[in-house]
Length: 199
Image (cartoon, rainbow, N blue to C red; front, side):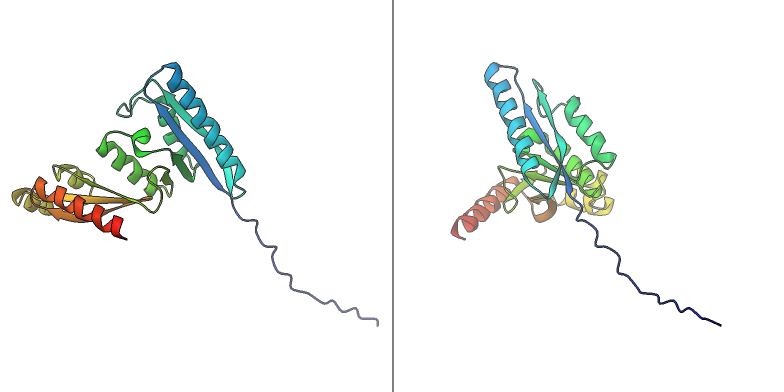
């Protein structure tokens, strides 16, 4: 009888192609004047080219609102961008500056926190990734409401008149310090500024 032998060869799975990051940008001008509309068109053009030039990025669009302030939550393109983020269509958002994204500190913090929870980064160009922004809140109410501190910590902090100092560094928001009165917040900010200039 003639026997045939089969030889099995183990093959390595082909390497997966790197997944490109889906990048979008947000632009806004608050007035509908010709100069502002030109500025908006320039921002849209700049971000479209910047995203499409990067081989590691996939273009996910440029969302642009005009004639609307950064405090209005009714900005249609901003809301459309957030919807696409929630649908998993965007991995990173580029923005010229924090003031273009939101003027209201609480809205900014809540939006960045939500996006971070979805795994989406926000890059503010004027502030650069390696810079930090320091903000202070007048009340602990919103930190408690957002779950960043316990109700007990909020009550104690309120009694002691503590003012939290938060640091935004790139995509990261953290507690930096706390102080008891507004004057101390100003001193802390000046000392941070001097230390950064000396570095």
